[in-house]
Image 1 (cartoon, rainbow over the protein chains, first blue to last red):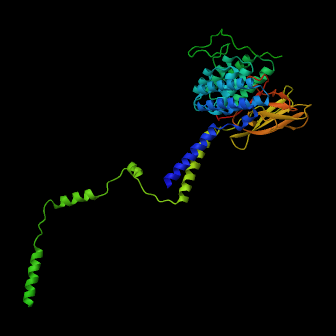
Image 2: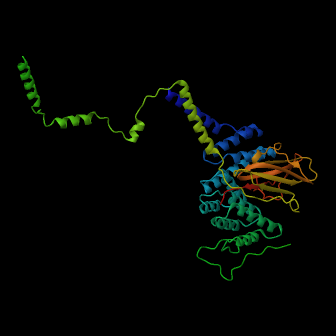
Image 3: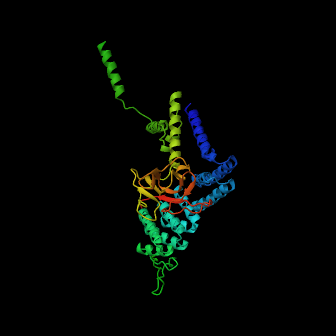
Length: 223
Length: 204
């Protein structure tokens, strides 16, 4: 009797979780039926390989809210899946928010390699904020390599999330005051203790030192 | 007659006083038999896997099955839950006097370390309605209206868990306005800018 009850309960649980995982998402009803079906298939496929599904649905809902055509909606959704997949692979193991931030960073122009290096620098720490700051800096016009080098060094220095956000705010303020984005980052990074950033923002190879004649970062241009 | 009895008693007594001759291997055989009859010593694993008969009423069986199902569902829901990251951080405190800030995002510490209240502010002097749309409300243009505050400011405060969110304002139901004071979202293929807010985060 007990064995039979347990079997029935187990089957019910398995069926329930399967239905929840593969059932259509009701929010996609905002799309036309054909587009919703394609998006649902993309979501299911992504979910099967461990890519978080919520940001994919978010992108589709965003498109629906902006009344985008089916082709633009699907193109945006597919692009999002590609970014999420790259971030997921680069950051694994990663939380959903890390993957979302990583996808944004890749969408901004950061490389998957940078994300992997960030993960190596902080293997057991939530990376959402460092990756988000990386994406924000690149989005503000900071050279990709400079942003990556600075964030990698800040991450390896075990800088707190709050300090990283403050760092980004300071860079934002300098840019708003007229500083060149890359120069603003370089100067703020030096102030934060980042070492060995050359003029292009690339960290020098370990074992080398900056020569006396090496150019220093360009100071911000005040209006 | 008494003499006969005495003789009988004496004979029995003598007989009983004789030493009893026992086979020398008797002790060995008895102990071997005892060893064979003793229950075998079970290892913990054998104890675990030894089949038992349990009697259970139908109601009891349903109760056990329900408890098992609840445990599995709890485990599944915990696995799907967003990671709890703590403690919160502050970001972009509102400064209504900043000339470049038509809209701002401000974070305030929430009662728990997981959820933070985030204030969204937009300066929109001629607007009749302003709503907030983003990843956090499924881009529903009706679910998060802003309230008119002092001056030309519109504001709303919502709870957010740690993560990175894309959002924008919708003015008068048709004009999409990115938050000018927040970082821009990467190109979203829709040709219109959105903003992002990153809600921390870890303690490190």
